[in-house]
Length: 64
Image (tube, rainbow, N blue to C red; front, side, top):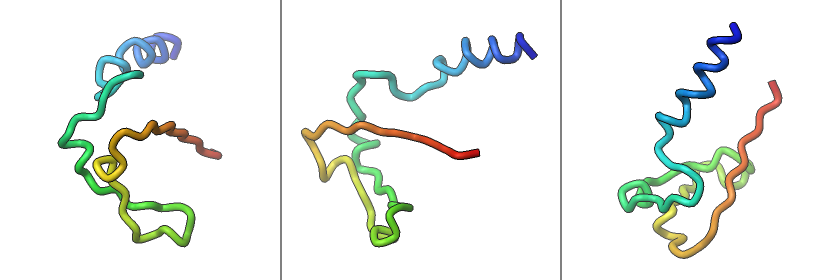
């Protein structure tokens, strides 16, 4: 178990598409994403290309 956790920690960053401080590629900026929360935005799409020049902070949380 200890070795699998260590392997996970070592190899996960190798497969990351972006790192801290990277700029988003133009192809990825043009992708459309759906909101899943809050309820009044469900069905509305979001694109980074429409928000060029802005700074984004992402947070991911889960209550498992």
